[in-house]
Amino acid sequence: MTELTTLIHDASEIVVGPGDDDTLERYEDAALAVVDGRVAAVGPTDEIVAEHPPENASHAIDADGRSVIPGFVDSHTHGLFAGDRSDEFAAKLRGKEYQEILAEGGGILRTVRAVREASDEQLLSNLLGHLDTMLAHGTTTVEIKSGYGLDTGTELRMLDVIRRADDAHPIDVVPTFMGAHAVPEGSDAEAYTERVLDDQLPAVADQGVAEFCDVFCEEDVFSVAQSRRVLEAGVEHGLTPKVHAEEFVRLGGAQLAADLDAASADHLLHANADDRAALADAGVTPVLLPGTAFSLGADYADARAFLDEGGSVAVATDFNPNCHSQSMGFAIALACVGMEMTPAEALLAGTHGGARALDRAGEADGADGADGVGTLREGMAADVTIVDAPSHVHVPYNFGVNTVETVLKRGEPVSG
Ligand code: NIG
Ligand code: FE
Image (cartoon, rainbow, N blue to C red; front, side, top):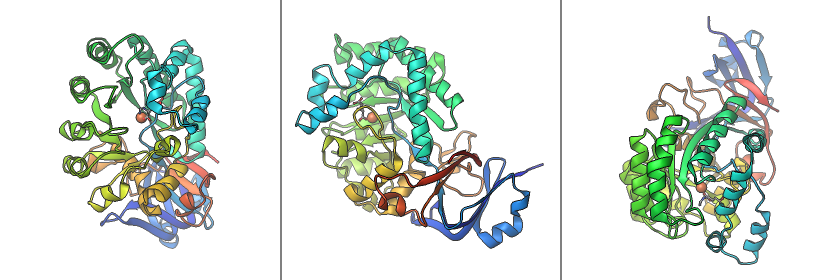
């Protein structure tokens, strides 16, 4: 027999997801009923409560004038790492360039040294700590990339720790293999690409943890041709492509993502109109990462152009040692203030947009039998964030502050 697990009632609003014309669909004075971990009904409190009385629920939550939104789907992070690069943040503020630091063996390569030295238990404990912070800030699904190993053994170790964290933590963790994240010291891009193809990818496929394959397609990192080879081999091994594209220069990663039907093209600070059109035509989700531009002091991606040309975007944190924020609320605030997105657009980009970038948006994306996430429509996973404010606008409006009060995963309270 189906059982009413949770009833949330008397919310000042419930944000459901994108409406028909991609505006935000919401109810005021609203309630949401959860059966078997999925949204069973959402609508005005009086209607929902008549059908699903609070006394029949294992948990009844009086949202009492607060706003209820889908849990955030953070679709781009490098959240598993070791070491401390706060000194690089200070150096960048004094004018040092990100790529200059990398060329000197710092940046990603410094994190690679720290990860290779760390034990599995240290890595797991670091990741679980970050997941706790993300959950407290309303994230219910997060993508985590490998890519701080750059050798087969350490890449496999990272993916195994990501899997263990997924098992141990209420947040759903989506694993991405990113062996082509940087060229390791003592190698060159061409020779290292061969190692990714010949050694890493077959071992990653055998291990069976990774779902996506990502490449840093960038000047002085991996060329378009090298990126293509890695991503095409990834597809042969069952991994869906993603691309770090046009972050520092316009190299062609967005067109590559479109060509390969990637799930997403990410960063896109230097994407132009042709790139935007190619991504939209191919149905590739652009993932915008305003925290990275903020921490680099760079110009933001042109979110308005993506949106005004009829596309939709995702917004994610890019949490990593170079962009040290786990907060989707902060990314959404930056999306509004730095990229001129409306609070409604930014909120949808951090929920439904993120789900699209991870092939988890439900029916439309054929989520492979898994529940869809990122909206609170009937039948979707009941991953819910309750904001301690009367509307979703307060998420970016109250910037720098965590407005999240309670988080539910599949209808069960897991934080707050
Ligand atoms: O998405 N751009 C490449 N990768 C990361 C940065 C990783 C790092 O600096 O450790 C990014 O921003
Ligand atoms: Fe990244």
